Image (cartoon, rainbow, N blue to C red; front, side, top):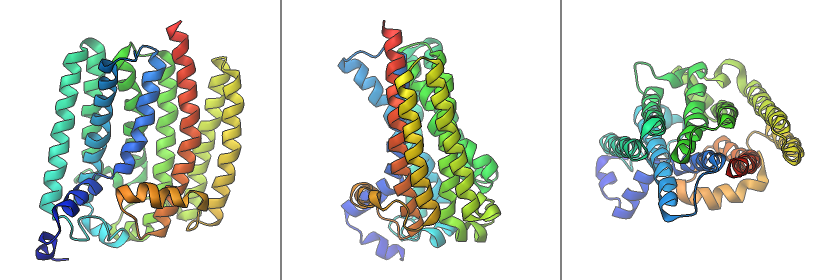
Length: 335
């Protein structure tokens, strides 16, 4: 689509394209980790002040921080997206590269500014933890997609970066909002680090064609889709098992059975996706198309939709257990 055609877009369509390039579905992924970090602290009060603090840290890591990483990724991945996902805002012509760059710059400085504010407002070591976390998140979000490092070119560097941002620093920052870092947070952040890694590894299978043409060393390019599934599923299932063991050592005995039951259900879903990568888990099809789809735009890549369906199902199981465990731990510190 030409720039002239691009300019014919209505104001609403243009705003929608700017939101879509920030990939709102990824914002949703951040919030449960932040909520878990807060719950583990056991120190948040049901006051407007504390709710505003929680909203501020979600805004920083979600729409702004995560949005920046998604926007800058689309900016540098125009050629790949033209093959893998031609309906994205830039390759479809709904946004120019210049507009996308301005988009990423605005959310970057807003996220950084909010980090500075929270650093001084919270103060001390806790404030520094929050500021350091968002600063590190923005840096890795940039070098993940931007040359010369472009960490996403190799799965050995790309997956840890995603795990670090989504599943690790979020727990510490949210915990630091209201209390000193609880010992259990180190374990929970580590488990969520590996879970996020596993999901980004699985995500690679939808982009095999474009990755090969772009010279990206994704796991799917190196070992194929079936091998990628197995690697991802093994990591996911090990995380479930370790989580169950931790709950046992923390004397959260009912949660052990809940976690193991979630593992069995997850394995059933994994088998469905392994056997049918394009169809995946059809039970979650309506959720993706009518729920997330109306917010983020629908992908023409059937494998992408299949991945989203699995992600919805897996996250519901895992994060449900996450939040219950975090709440139980937080109650211990409240006593």
